[in-house]
Length: 345
Ligand SMILES: NC(=O)c1ccc[n+]([C@@H]2O[C@H](COP(=O)([O-])OP(=O)(O)OC[C@H]3O[C@@H](n4cnc5c(N)ncnc54)[C@H](OP(=O)(O)O)[C@@H]3O)[C@@H](O)[C@H]2O)c1
Image (cartoon, rainbow, N blue to C red; front, side, top):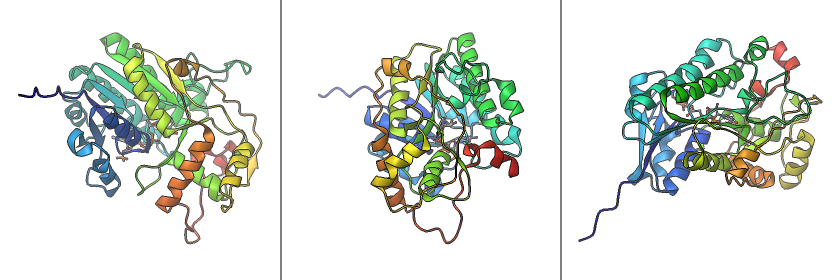
């Protein structure tokens, strides 16, 4: 008689239908995990692709949960040994009500995740934070590369109404503090601008819209010194690496080197010459280079930017996101516009 195979390790991915969340769900299924993926509306067409992922019928449960509703979060974590907390909105437009739009989902949502992890006896929690929680620090010496010891200055974020960075910084600090106080294994993970192919083709997430704007062009100025980027598939790999290898309370930054927009266009235009491309550039002194050495030392091997760009654009073409849009202007998501334009809104 055959002995039944042991059950697969079960983990939960919050925001499993989102851009990063869905690539993580896909990777976990392919690496022998059973997964609970939380979404706010399982009936929404944009989440239908999840059950079509390889291995999903046997090993994936899509669970309705809102991070602001503790009971739904707790129910989603039942039986899970690990949680990847990915769910936080990435605002596309100017934030009008910071408390409602970003502080509550990011900070209250993360507190619910922390409490539910403790109550449901989850062993490890990986929080997806952001370099937004690291880079806005006016006191950091200009000539020193930022690493995991650099935090965004919350007062500076408030003064500059950088609510997203404030929210991510507060949520990350809170998670590390909670982990230490309650004996919960917490790691935080801070990726830069994440781009890459889309798994679902119904809506593009905010950061994919940044690359779409660079391709299509439009009325908004864009910084020449651009954000460091990283491929969404390498982000998923890094998250799993942390889950399997990182020590408690460790922070990991994740990015490729910062690029100039001119250099980025120099890579994209010869590969895809038929797009109009963003041409309203402003030269800014924006040095946001930071080190991913700690993650590389854990075994992280990111792919080359050229590969990411080519495969992202092919994916947008397949999804029909690059077709003419009936005269509707393409806009750069607000968070990525240089300050003078922000002030005019
Ligand atoms: N993309 C980047 O460049 C980048 C860089 C650094 C860090 N991050 C972080 O990575 C995470 C995912 O970002 P993403 O780019 O993948 O964005 P995304 O595709 O927009 O995913 C965000 C997810 O959060 C969910 N969500 C928002 N509020 C929620 C709530 N109250 N309860 C439950 N779910 C909620 C959304 O679910 P619905 O579908 O129901 O709205 C969505 O699945 C975020 O924590 C973000 O801060 C992203």
